[in-house]
Length: 301
Ligand SMILES: C[S@@+](CC[C@H](N)C(=O)[O-])C[C@H]1O[C@@H](n2cnc3c(N)ncnc32)[C@H](O)[C@@H]1O
Image 1 (cartoon, rainbow, N blue to C red):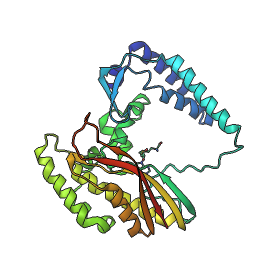
Image 2: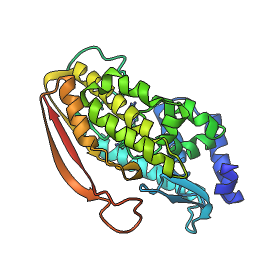
Image 3: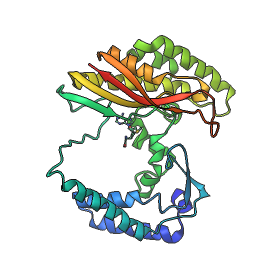
């Protein structure tokens, strides 16, 4: 089982003790929620499982062990200390929070009817096969929210923008259905060329990954988000999207240009891309040699 393979027995016993205490004492107060957060935050630093991926915590690899592992009670105290210092720092500067957090799907913004948004700053998923659902598997297994791979799609992934081939394959998305969707109409001809090429190229790869449907569904979902944003943004508003292009199986997808074109079709007026860095230009760790970039996509109007 994932947890037994990822912890020393003593460590797991200490983590379980912390979890049991929390379950006994929790009362839905902000304090109790922060204690939950502190315990969740130490699950990776106390685990022997190695990690891989562009972000260090992207994949948990129980078969690759790491040597430096934090002791749970110590790590927990430290984490509580960090949270306490953050709270004190903020409380010394502001008497109350101005934030209003909506935990929801950006494709629906169901509760927002007024158009009073001045600015949008977002770091959306890239179309680069990062599986946000899998990144949560470890924590959700610890808390008993899921029992394994099978549960994760319904618990998390299906609520997210399609940005991984696991997602599009699990939903058995059909390319032709995606391409006829109204949402992709503004970029349909170029998108169709790219995803048909991906459909061909996958036949020569062992994994036969569903990048073709992932890229089409990604564009559909982003377009829906842009239409929702147009609905709730003021007529003169500004958006900043941190975004990068991608090249699954080496097939280039001009994602930032597609997003800009979808934004204009949704009713925004201007766009400008400000490159921050090049990607995939070093020789190490490359699956293909297509130069990529990431930066800020400014959209206005
Ligand atoms: C590149 S990450 C940005 C993370 C963020 N900057 C942060 O620090 O937490 C993309 C985020 O988009 C979220 N996401 C994916 N689909 C979404 C959706 N339909 N609605 C709202 N958020 C979504 C993912 O869960 C992920 O946290």
